[in-house]
Length: 387
Image 1 (spheres, rainbow, N blue to C red):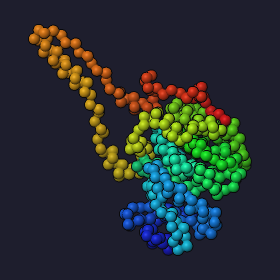
Image 2: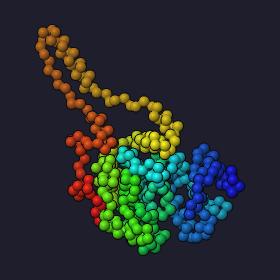
Image 3: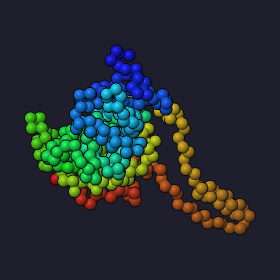
């Protein structure tokens, strides 16, 4: 342990320094009282003397602390210690999506869909608390070795209910190229702004690059023009393996006008679940973890190995098959006795499990189960985000 690294901070035992950024320092720590690892985020001392920065730090803790969801990093505490300000939050043993994009993008469509579903579930939980994140991007989405996806960093989150903002109207806040056009114009964003950022993030996972290009010399102005013109390649052209349903959902989120995007995160989540088949969280996480481990983005977690060792659930019992067999045997016995032939009525077979597998893999569904295309998309294959 280095000289500058304290042994303890408050009631936490410091294990290592995870990194340092413009706002502060991250430490991996142990909370002995609850026998768990946590992350301590310390605000830089000079920023602590800035009322605006200190207020933003406190708001980050408060905003994140109000959200309790498996796809959002949990905040445990916010406290002062020897003149410094700290946030104690959940430790996610893995990395962020920025690392995933750099290592293996474009990501397999089924895995990108699993990440998209977990992420939008977290966004929905955030919005239910009346909070707009305003900075959804790969660096602010963590993925664990077990395949759990969690949104973090509420540093510039906004109270969607009209609470006071920490930035003036006309001042753009966020991270290009993930900012919505209303953010780039310095307008007060609402929840639909996060849907735009989510669309950029998922597009990047699938295609390996962000949808809208910008001139580095013009920064935000160039990006805004690109978005308003809908100047990005259709997702199924940029990522040929992307299923139609996922491409349609992402494309709708990338529209320049907020009113033309999906109504809310719940609507996006519902669309994804209709495609994936409302897969259980454990299955979604397992698929993500297995794919990332196979490509050596993360080492395979021991817990995950144990999970895979569990035998798969038995196939659903088919009482109709037993009924047919018993009826046939009874009929044969009656024929042998000279009574006659007994007609056998076979019940309809239950739901074909292959259909749900087809949903998850993005394969075409049987006609009876096909998901109807959105009424406002004439041709999703060639569609580009419309203003």
